[in-house]
Image (cartoon, rainbow, N blue to C red; front, side, top):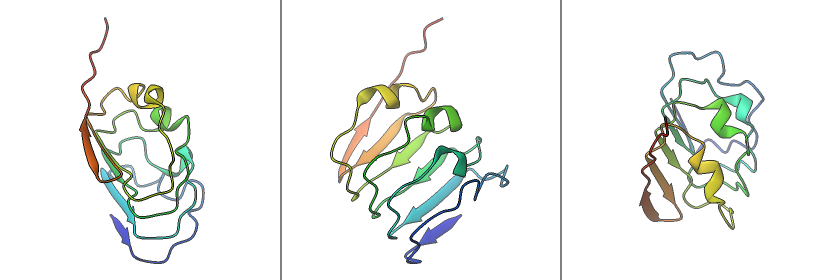
Length: 110
């Protein structure tokens, strides 16, 4: 599902939660300043938030999106990233931040 260059300012809580089969969501080139983890279905595999005005990501996003593989947050206002929240995504393998690509590998302890 794509919401690209729609001049969206805000997304309502639970906006995409009912889309149980949604695997990829792009909300890019808008003016979104914040997101909440309860906006998205838990089966989401790819989330693209490029070219918005995000200053941070919710600290509980990994709990809400346990199957997320790819996260794109290029060209936002996020000043720094803590490595810890990304490590909590059990399936996350790729993050695109600020025009530079990082490939992350996680080993699962048994």
